[in-house]
Image: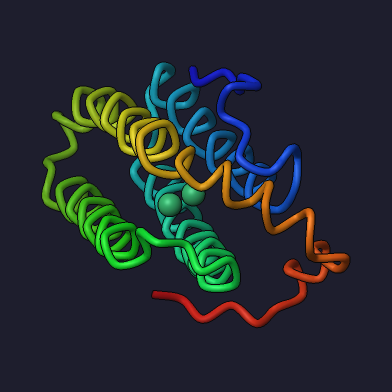
Length: 153
Ligand SMILES: [Fe+2]
Ligand SMILES: [Fe+2]
């Protein structure tokens, strides 16, 4: 299970942190259910929810980076595209797995998703922290970011 820690915070409980916590909740749910023997339909549903929310989150995060002229935009967006591709690969792998091997594969996926999300938050997203602080000093309406239209990657 992934436990939220303060050192993961990008924007002090703002929209990015809320998104990350929601993604962590979805992955934790997958892991908890996988430990008990997860049905294929249920697993597919959770992974598609994860995919949908990840697309929404990446769109929102990329908007934030554009707003603060984040210098590492190109590499970061490329990493988002790679992460979406890995998630598609995971979903595809599960679809191709025979019923009698599903339990093992679900266990492997839970570990993989854990590293997939936490690796990105800790190694790439956290670099935004100093820029978000700067922007918050100058932007009165930071909360309005929530309402911006999200264009999935
Ligand atoms: Fe990111
Ligand atoms: Fe993120």
